[in-house]
Length: 168
Image (cartoon, rainbow, N blue to C red; front, side):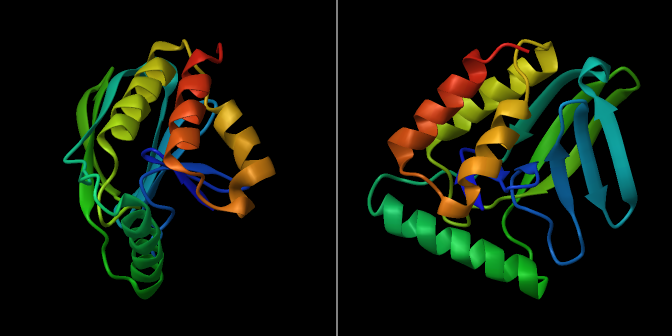
């Protein structure tokens, strides 16, 4: 598993925020759209049904000790998810054809995300909604590299920029 910006990438799936918690809550990206799972059930929207998808209340990290904080927060989030403890919550606000929706997203980085990565992630999410980028390159990268763990900050930023340029 690897964290790249606001995305948690595994060999099998790409999530906004953390991977599924102990009770299965998650937001998964697919080539078709966005799927949410929570105690109230699951919901899905195609990219065409979405007008916007904005992640709010993103915890941000400072620059001091960010590598050790990132690794520690990933371990903490993973352990918390396994034990059923909730990691920090973010909100995913969706504008859909049927009106606004709000989804709780659990942060994978308990110590916060780097501001540039969060901004690049939001830009990429905007491009998915607009149909100008496709989540499949994230999944392909995950199948090849997720087991290597989370890359360094400069690599994560470069990945987000590359994925945003990939045509849908």
